[in-house]
Image (cartoon, rainbow, N blue to C red; front, top):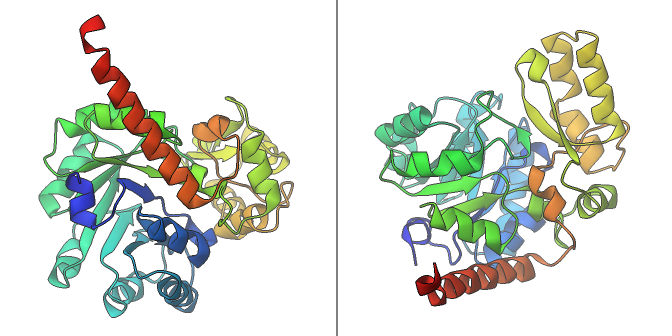
Length: 318
């Protein structure tokens, strides 16, 4: 077991990224049950919706899972914090805002805190505030991204050199090679979102999954740069429309509405790719099948271990 698996009490050093309002119990539970850390993202959902997902997840697995709270986005911050304690959720993931004021509350209730960051400065501040784990997300990742646009490859070793707590790499990881490479850079594990979409337990529309399976290396696009709201999505008719609106000079308020969780659900759950968007990371080009979660995790671990064995056996040939 490495530092991350010890801290989070999981078998594999792999975490599910928060998926906002398309979060669900079947996928979260399957990930935790298979030995990684499943995550329920609260997005902008109401308390009753999140509570129902938590309860269903707990019915499906007795293993640890996390609640992801986007600090500046959820309209029910204090209520979501209380849900973590009420249901004995052992880990909370804090993103999209300043986590410092919230960490003492969670530590008072013996909850481990993961903080999602995009820079060395943010990582150091999170560590100083008491974070137990840092997730460092690079520009390759799906969904809302930092305007800094730093890649995972460049970010991880710099953060590892800056902080002493476990660092988890996010963005661009979807197989054992990605896991092995991030471990080689000093990370304690990885966080994945896009790759988990294309699994059998993920209750998303087939149009979403097939878009990922058929993706190429250039099948994602950045929207929102013109209004300071960088988001990586799959190339779809709806995404093309967003880019057209940006060229026409769309206002931030209008762009925010068009990229709200309502339109996320239309794309991801209803499969209407001309009426809603689907998030997707650059790793989508590596997605070629739809395994079970357990098959995916075991394959990743097997690949990663094989890579390290091969590198070790070839040590003298360098």
